[in-house]
Length: 252
Image (tube, rainbow, N blue to C red; front, side):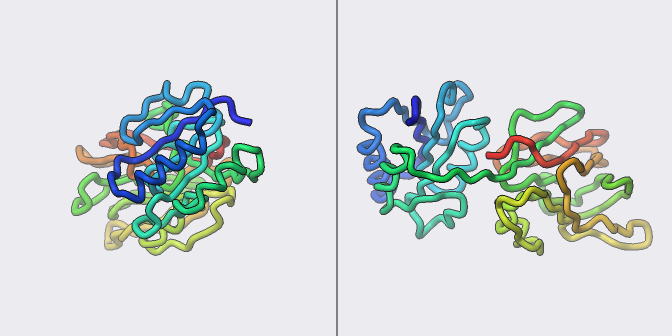
């Protein structure tokens, strides 16, 4: 069914996690598979891979997913007592289901992702959960100009989040956003703690970004501005930098 499988696991040393790793290796015995640590991944690890199996929690899944273009991915939550497992499909005591996957008995779920263009260049990484735009230090004010649907305004805030359905139950929800389906083809924006006063009166606070639409930010910070993808990859976003964010046409 699968020509090449990559198993990605985190660096935990707990007994339950290591037992799960060994159990998966036993099930995959006789197949063409390799094992990699989540914080040591490289692009060439994924060459020719048509199935990625992650062992750990949501962080391990997100890290591996950021390298994927067309391969399938299956997440195993090795310690459900410590990880929400919002992105995983199997718990540590359900690894026998992996045999059914190897036999082709599974359904494929497509999850929306976010495409980011920074200063005219499309980034090679896409976000599965959310993109954060703002100051790197959370106690500093995020300063930027925002453009959406022909409207433009300057804002001061604690940063902006653009999320997918997968990420809408995480940081976005904690910031006051309303969760939506993980397969829904849209993105959602929420501006965190927007400042409003005599000079700044923000109105682009909560928005839906549909297919074909994009939201644009231009940084007004001299230094210390960033764009963060899934709290995993960060890029400098300082004065004059422009980022365009839209729904990707390449779902996970």
